[in-house]
Image 1 (cartoon, rainbow, N blue to C red):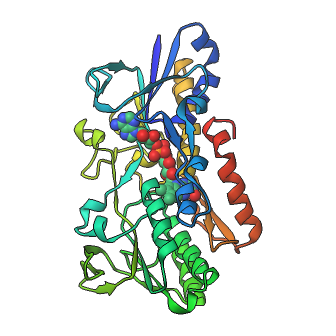
Image 2: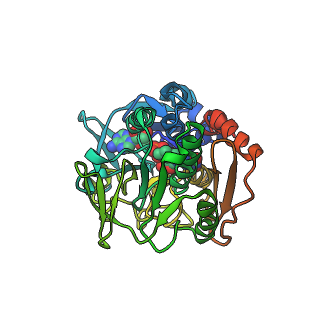
Image 3: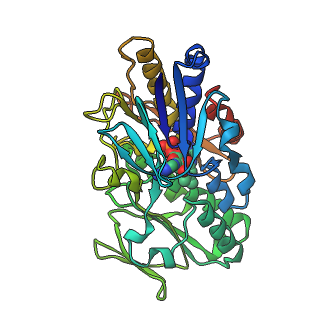
Length: 379
Ligand SMILES: Cc1cc2nc3c(=O)[nH]c(=O)nc-3n(C[C@H](O)[C@H](O)[C@H](O)COP(=O)(O)OP(=O)(O)OC[C@H]3O[C@@H](n4cnc5c(N)ncnc54)[C@H](O)[C@@H]3O)c2cc1C
């Protein structure tokens, strides 16, 4: 019996398990292969909806489905918190004492915002990067009477384009609520341009001034003073705000640190082509959990899932699992409330943002609804 364990049942873990269930169906039915997903919640959460929740354009129910309903019937589901991966024994140790042995392990535990790494940020700032945060921000926007909105970005973080989307959407939102004349939007970014991807930074560099959005680069937030309503950067600048919207720096899951598998940020060292954990033949890593310097996005997890599933099923069939990930990523970018653009790129080809259109915006909304087919491994 070959035991394949997917640690994390979010975007990446669900896609890999569902693809494997189809590719290895005869072996599963014969009892030769077992596929198990471990997820700490019984809910599958589609995080891109958080952006829309902040603007009252989506509700939590849009983003939730029972994890069981997302998984192929042949896939076993364990709902519980994994405490540690014991590599030497090829086991996942669960918080309740259960041990889950594996022959192949896929780490798809995602990433989490770490607002506590910046003093004052949790008290003084809002974020749409968690569901609770998005709902709180929605309420803060409902109460907003005008003033300065600062959108501050820390790195690394998942969905690298979402801060740009929020900035452009909030600009439109202010105008639609007759607050445009009484408000200003300021965007800060930690390096010397507006985005880590150079062509996207150049694009934003044109779009922001056209909309009257101010920006400040080389701004690494060091502290937030929730009483004075100011944020101060490592570089020594201080900005006042009326509403602070933060994209906090992210880290990998603590489980990775406890298992001594990751670097200081709990990112797992991963081969950029095979997606195997470095030095571990039977462990694959995908999605946000990797240390790869590429976009931490659901689409990244999607394209990586094709490679991980194909290689594991090929190896179960006696092959050597030689498919390679080429770094492919595709991201829609909302450029306001009714237009969007998109970027696609890989290790060889940089992104080139397209002219925004309403049609692309409608595609993005349609994709959000079709995500569940993608998680099911069908799309
Ligand atoms: C506001 C926002 C907007 C976004 N917009 C987009 C977008 O438009 N396009 C896009 O491509 N991406 C977008 N993303 C990013 C996308 O959601 C993530 O990159 C994607 O979900 C990563 O998939 P993953 O499988 O690596 O991790 P996740 O989907 O986060 O799944 C990780 C899973 O692991 C589980 N887990 C973690 N630790 C443990 C443990 N110890 N024990 C058991 N289970 C555990 C978690 O509960 C979770 O279910 C957005 C994200 C946010 C926050």
